[in-house]
Length: 104
Image 1: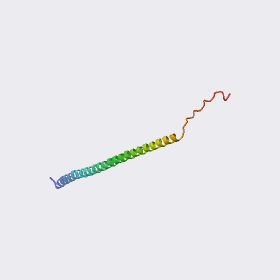
Image 2: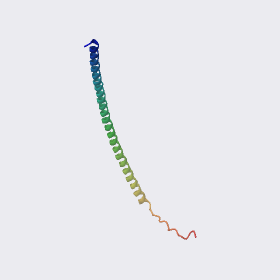
Image 3: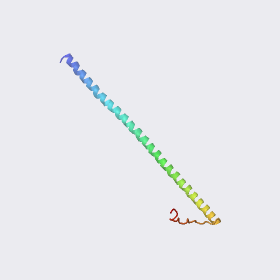
Image 4: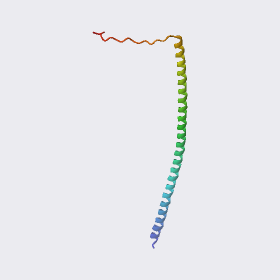
């Protein structure tokens, strides 16, 4: 085998080996980056879901308080009405039926 052929063979083996190693290295780097990204996404998603759930609980509590306030206000209003009706005589006024012959 000539020197040039040996050099070409060695160069081919070195270049091929470096190419295989480089591709393996890049795949490993991408895998590590993807694993880190997935970990970050899972952590953020867990935090976001917990925060959203806490928001739902706060909304439910606020809604419950609001309904209780409205109910208390309604009961106060009923008591006032009963008090006023006892003090004053309340009559319902029924409007008289309109006659159909007014415009003719």
